[in-house]
Length: 459
Image (cartoon, rainbow, N blue to C red; front, side, top):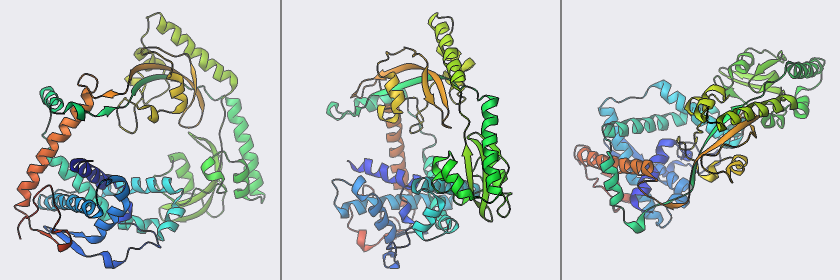
């Protein structure tokens, strides 16, 4: 891996906040102050030894293959010098991020960490701190990362690439260095979600009302949640969700959760997931912990069969060339996210319409495995994001074989790479200009590093 690639990884890591250990260590972690020595100064910003050490511990084995520990830490040091230069210049230029932006990013990070570890309670136990304390420690780091993002974008906002630039970029890549592109697939679908019958809704509500009555009459809510709740995440915890902040729950559920008092059992609540009853465990300020029982109405076999036949009839019309797939998606699909774009599915990992096979649900991948490009499948059974059964028609728009990058097949990827290279050159020029105008001091521990830029600055 070359130095440019390493720098890109480091910057992306800093911006996305993957290196959480930099500012939040577990209760039994070794985060002693003996590491907190200043090893660099950029303007009014300082770089601590602890920052370098913890970033290396977090990323060393993955990102620095082929580098010695000393070389890896030099790369991390240079990345920190660059970030501090951006932050220092942002302060000078009065570039700011709002409290709302910081709070929003804090909440997003907390949700990510909670999802990874299982619950807020487990996260608090792991770090030996409350969620509020963890967020307080993260706040400065996230504000700085948002400033880095904003300042970096400011330095490259007027940069664009033309088709000629892309062609020149591609021509400059040696043939034996052309990247290998995995197979990619583009898919569109038309989804039909069968309605839940009124009879099924009433059946679920009656069953839930019976459970509520048993709880009111003295039976243990947690035990009944463990036995009957259809929320796989909380049922094993006796229905307990763990402390959550306002805004983290669906509105209908949250509105009731924050108004419960004592050990009161709520009336039946309907959400997109089904029907719930809940009981308050604890509320502290804008955080609430409740236990709940979820029962989910099921689609009847008759309604499921009707959905399949409905899509089958649409498929037959499309086969006569009187209706295109794009038109059918807009008119008939129940998937609001894709219906206005011809049913094209978006890869959540990249934001593009292309998927590598490993990024596709295995059942969907199995469905398209034998399809030809342009072919429309028969109705295929699926599960929606809320776990309900539905049917869909699938169209295979494009499939590429594994290949060396080519201008014709991979123009968008090459365009992005050419733009990134052009932006990198602009940033390098920006660094050189600002280095000469900024006080920069590198401590003895890193003074012998071989950096890609000159970090002499004003001393």
